[in-house]
Length: 59
Length: 518
Image 1 (cartoon, chains in turn brown, purple):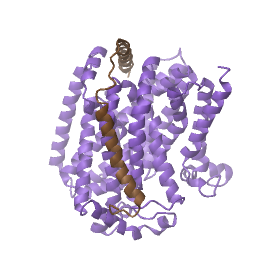
Image 2: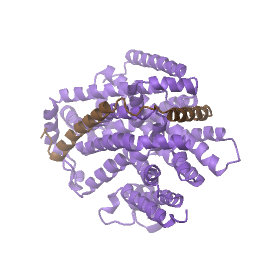
Image 3: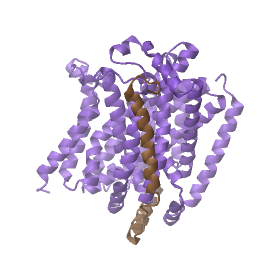
Image 4: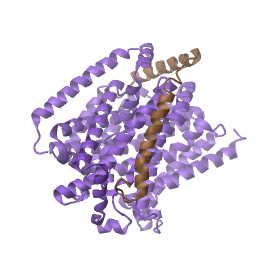
């Protein structure tokens, strides 16, 4: 199939295309999900970014 | 490509540098303080985020090193691409990424060793993990350097040692000038050049060879040209899997596909990126873009690496490894130089070198923080200046990586990557999974697992796996033979298949045994 000697190679060639398609579909379905909305989450993120920036300054 | 076209090369390099400079300025302006960073972060396009992750993940090692390996092993490497998408993108982002980010923020962890150390409340885990990363990672950094130097060697027709020196100096200057943290925009530009380059490479290759199925058929028809030595250990042609259970099969499946495919989950410089994303939404979006990016970059490298056999056979009457004079690290550079138009070769070279730069800068960042922030601060809390130690650590890491680049044997890129990924997986993966998902894991269990995984990895490399044990020679010195167990398949079973299960079993058994005590 597809000019390959082994069907397992043809399988994985197609499986890669399927895997990308799954990633694309997953990304589209969840495109707007998971944003930090709780005040607590945003505060946690800000605090972490602040510490990270301080650490980076040392490098 | 015939002679170096200085004019064209200069135009491409200057345009590229101007674009990088502009984007760097843009990034600098947007990240003045943490709050600005946060706001800017909210506006960063998911394309930029995912491609910059991809640019760190994919380097000269994947394209030059593993693409060259595909020139010998053939299309079986596409299983590695599948692992890269399934483990390296989907499972990494969805299963590991979201929990890593949450845990990192709750524990206020900023490096991978710190995440593990704080989760298990152990300074030893953080310090020892830092030390392991600092000592093992130069091997990986050096093969990324080698990949870039090999491409420069072929393209500019300069001596390999000179190429390595030139690229090393560029990297050292880049890192020391403060380019440690790849600015997202420049990373994304590098990734985009790579991405477009790979698509063009695939299209030109297929069209040169008569179309998709026709090209594959031509490659299938070359099976009789596989060298007798390789046929005798299981090579069955470039479009077939090796004979199941043969030496060739074990190397492909255990070292290349599983070692690298699974090892990616416990890569410190990648895991840390999950903590830096702004929210889970960015991770969801990155699955889409990252998935496409990884399949295109690695899949194309492996397909083109395999098909280069057809090209070299048609043009020079040789298979790829013969055309590259026995060094499979030269297959991809040589193929691109011979088969592609000059402008493309230069553009691709820029893309490849910058992909190497973004990977290297994240590696040196990981090594620097490992030795300063993780190892030194935890083991010698009241001594010395952490900032200075970190900087000295980075300089030492750069020097060791460059020395290794000169010392390592030819054809080492893929193997060096696999060794490092294997050590990381055996040492950290069980503990990392437990840190995220298993409340029952104890501090003693995690400590024992890290030690057991690391020692088992080293032991397998030094005494069991033929490629390394024979080359290093310690086994021969102590026991008078190249490896401890000579019976097939042990000399070709990758250390990851021995050390990872040991590390996981130790974690579970010791955790259960010490559950009540802790």
